[in-house]
Length: 181
Image (cartoon, rainbow, N blue to C red; front, side, top):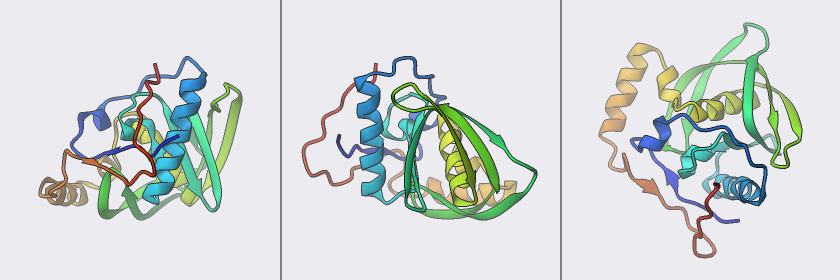
């Protein structure tokens, strides 16, 4: 497992829908480990595989002391209740904007061993699940902002000196990339 560079806003991989996982193998377990370590090192509540340059439908989360991951997730809102709250992204470091999300969701998918998983989330966990699932569709949270807020956010991001680069996080050992294919 290793801490892996996080792709930043402007990188085309963040706008590319991810491919479903078909092999639940050693490489997938390595990917989940890398995602988890990188998420912890960056201080995030979640991290999706495209954010580290891997186009597979996998994400991890760390919310309220719970660590988890989902492979090939499907997310359904529970009820109509929504919440508008500040949201950020490891691929858009240093910025937060109010984003509307469903307050309760149910996500189903698989774990890294190919076993079915169902996760019910409310509030921050629901937000993290929706945010990370969006990454798997090539959608960033700024796309969910109302038109005026989105225009202002995109103008700020266009001027960010890091746009289109990679954030290299400190790693305790050299970074070794393992192909998930």
